[in-house]
Length: 154
Image (cartoon, helix red, strand yellow):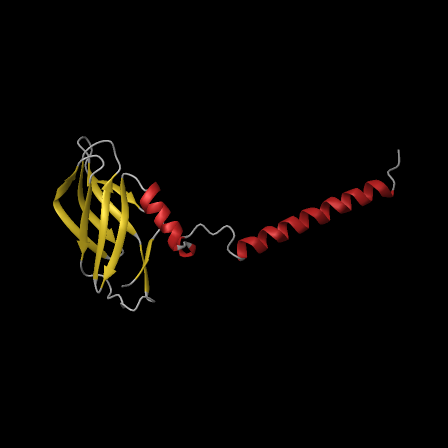
């Protein structure tokens, strides 16, 4: 049985199609289409994550004046938690022996020692945030933010 030009043309077409798909995937990856890093997060994505998706601690509002960052932190867990530390980039807010947060409670925390924020409305900041906390049964739990906290000075 002989295979004619139709079979060869189909095989060549499939090879060319596969090569084109591979090239498109490489191009998309190089342009950042599959970039999972936090460097491409917008302010609205940051707000949506920290105010709605972050658990067990959410940050409903934040702002920075000079070198002090202000956070409105809410316990989203159904139980009381003890917040011991907040890590914001290289700055640690030490809340030892732990601030007790009942379920649904919000508190404002001020964190001095941040880089000084220019208060002209144009300077922005982006911080990685983590929480060290205890529950009634488990100590030293860590919540690491999946997205940075982004905002503007002033």
